[in-house]
Length: 148
Image (tube, rainbow, N blue to C red):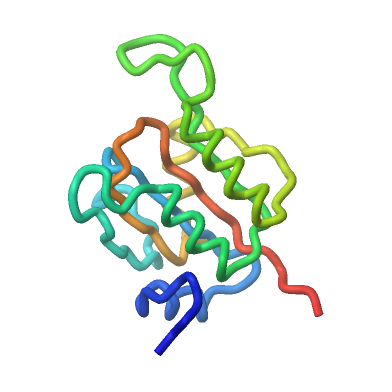
């Protein structure tokens, strides 16, 4: 019986095999999982129903198990039907969870198609499909180093 914050066996297996520089994608409910999955990435579906399990819950669980070196988000559009004029509200939630875990760097914004490209590389070990309904709620984490 596990007693840590992260107890999902498949996620733990992948994280146990991943190392420094490997990437983990937390993807919202709009993410094209089938067509943008990295060739080595394991897809874990936690998208039970809209809103469950959300991206921040997944982030907090991951942060209890792995160090983070970088955290990239999909840059939001400033024109068109999905345009925003300021950072999506979930970014503040991501920042808060990351800061609580000791990560003190800013989020790295990547243009939408650059984000898809980065999330589809061979470095991505794990893609987690969430039920997150907020837009621009995709987060690509780079696993850091555990220092002695």
